[in-house]
Image 1 (tube, one colour):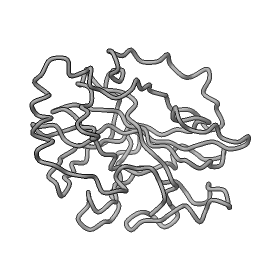
Image 2: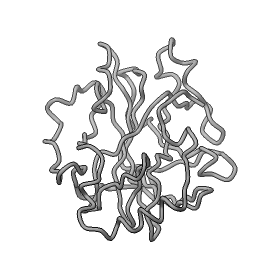
Image 3: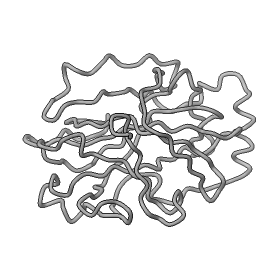
Length: 240
């Protein structure tokens, strides 16, 4: 496995008591005030673009809650359940490249860029569930600089020419007026029925020649797949 900041690559703590408390919180007034910091959404960029002219204004926000936006066009949804009983629906939205894909990304060196992909995660249960990031970004090994190729890891069930670099994920928006995340003793929970847009971006630069159509999303971690073989999330322009 690659050495990334994905929350799905480290064991999440689980507590039935915490989820019960979070369930009570969903019915309380002022839930949006308990949310994470203000987050913004970025658009898909064409290869080599610096994105300055294409980025929309920051999304509106409510207090400290993430901004809201209408749900994007997505591919077929995948339903998954963790060993703790958390259930999610995942659907791929789009891919892109950017010299600074996340607010905490280090600007890419000249002549390189970062790859990213976006997907929608939805809590399909009638209780809050842990916010996790099950989908991982993959790209052709040939588009990874030689000095970083040893850090680009293959996975079972994913084509051999594809690999995943160290990367991390962030929620960039709430969708269709979804309630804000719930903070509970260090854990972040998704309220019942809420949908969030997630962006996963590489931590290491890639070639500017990377075609965004070659960027893929897979769910492969054993927490989400019974046989630990990668399951592709098809993007709306590639779903057949």
